[in-house]
Length: 213
Image 1 (cartoon, rainbow, N blue to C red):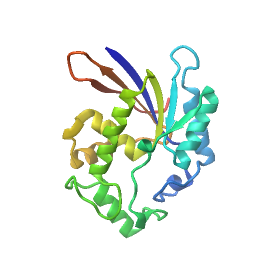
Image 2: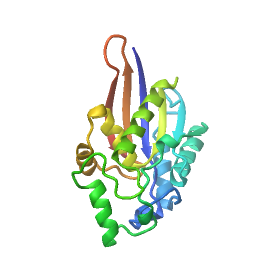
Image 3: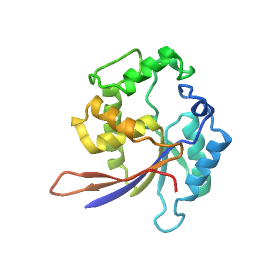
Image 4: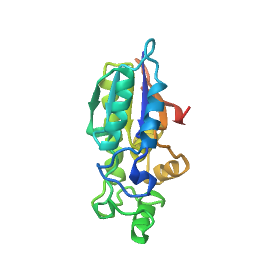
């Protein structure tokens, strides 16, 4: 039986986060966001039990967060597209979330019960996101390290944890319910464990959610 410990870290605050602007790949951290990332970096052990790898989404805000952690731990960063944020509909990227049509789209995608295959425009929909979460967990199981930091984004992190809990049976309505009631702060951390077994199904377990201390 082998055990892995995964530290999922959401990126620090960006200007768009602070101003409720729907984001794409661009957007640097605010000064507060850099402070949040540095505080997260300081929490990792540097000797016994220290992380063995840092893997990050290649988006600007996650790269910056991961680089701050990397500098503190004196470890290189790898990048994987498996960790990027859900792609928003192109028509709302860069727009304020309070605009009526933007709010209607986001409410329909994120806050309503709907069919798994709902697609409003050109966004990454529930089925797309669920498949990517499954691929990420498989990718983690194949890696040789026992302790890994993964720097990612809020919506995708919620999907990863939801898939850990429900597996292939996860529905869009279940995911939206879990997502709505379980926020993740900027630079919040989720810690999960993975155990592989000889004679029973491998086990994913969420240990900590949205930890900031």
